[in-house]
Image (cartoon, rainbow, N blue to C red):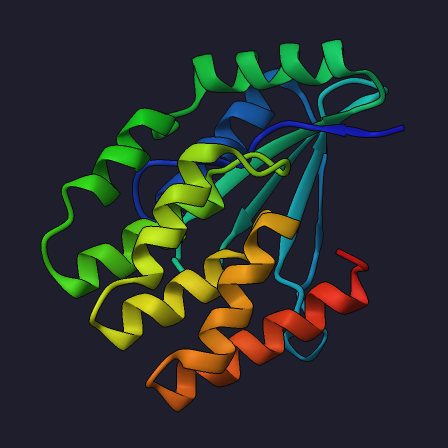
Length: 194
């Protein structure tokens, strides 16, 4: 079984973040391979470095937030956690509390939109309460772009807890665009058997 760390969002623009990860990998002698993304298949470019025989470091740039992020993968939870801690010591990772605070203190709709996406991107695969409550709060915003972002945010850490929110958006949101996005996510959840 493969274990994955949280997605660790890197500070700075994608190019400088990628340069710092490449420098880090070169410093350790890791060889990276890049898999090109396929927009039609819904995939993005991903570069993977083998940190050891059983541990890998993955670098991606999220297509919704334009945030660079990394995560580690390993055959054991302990190795994955150790690799995650190593990465956090060497790369400029945005702390989870900073991501949450950026949502809590966002004033404009564009700040709120970006913040809810970043909170969800930086969330664990197993949905946590901090992410759930902020996505739910964003779904109650008056700005339809914030609500649409909240709908999209449910795709980062799919959970049954999001289904009532998505169904409510599909049935009741005044924006046809939000309703359409909610319908797409509901269908994706069905395909994932969530």
